Length: 275
Image: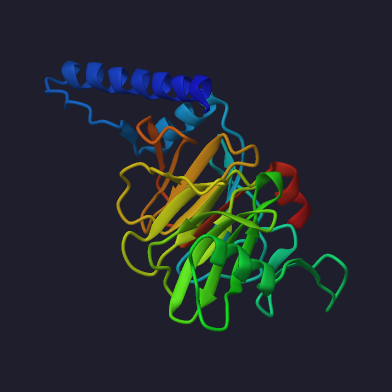
């Protein structure tokens, strides 16, 4: 996925690496051997690589004081951001969530919900997959995915599972223990979902069908966002935001030197309307 843009990104970073090496030789210094994946931290290098790959949109991120900031891509120019103080930028979920143990859609007005998958349906589906709990299972959190699927954190007795539903059928169950504080975040078009974990490894990424995917070897990822078309992924750490082609964890990374507590990726027109 994203092979042509990823190739442009690698080419842009490679050109910058060659230029840096030539400059070092002119000064009599020995150029360092580039690591893999290649990463460039200077803002000018990041701008060049983002522009060459055609990366657009606006990164909205919160700092450790829960103030919101925005950067326009690819130029990394500051953009207007909401003055409302909040730790998490707005991440829409299409009105899907969990209420009273059911997976619901809250699109009918204030206080009104429509049940999408009931507790009984969830319990029956998990029992058919070999999972049992006294009193059944209930949805604690739910997000929408592509093709009518949903990712659900289901609780039953002492068990807490990550369940991938196709309509009301449990298509895949992640048996690894899901923590009490763990939470979900879907990509804009629902082809991916992130499970945020309180401990190690900290974050796990899955396809809409429940297949676990690799991430680049970035230390301490604390938040994730996808571009509106899902071609690009941003990983936020305490010191930087890394951008890479979605589905290519071994490809080039572009390091944007900003510290982000959380991050979202919006289309430019949405940010302008919200400011």
